[in-house]
Length: 158
Image (cartoon, rainbow, N blue to C red; front, side, top):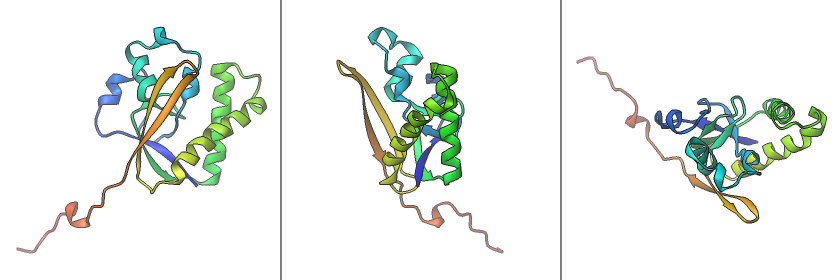
């Protein structure tokens, strides 16, 4: 089973998102946050979050890149409970039991997106507002092959 974690290559996410996700936290699309948005809502850092931000499950912050990785079943179950509680706290779901199936569907959608990709594949998301609602598209960046000699420091006794 796979899911994706936030990854940062530089500090840009800290500047472009009002609330950046932390490196390493599990992420989902989080497009539901924008379901009632209009063009008038797409200003400043909110526009950036809408345009290409994945949602971190610990912080509800946003990140530009996520990396595919394995997730253990217990971790997945905990994320479902965490997201269900988020739906209660932030979006007014009546209770965790009512929110759980929606949270499970969100986690499953992200898992389905990740399952066809190798570990360390990078994913990006792009969103646009349409008359039918929010449209998301995804891009993948395959992991690059790298030999150990590119990273190892070789020491000799000389």
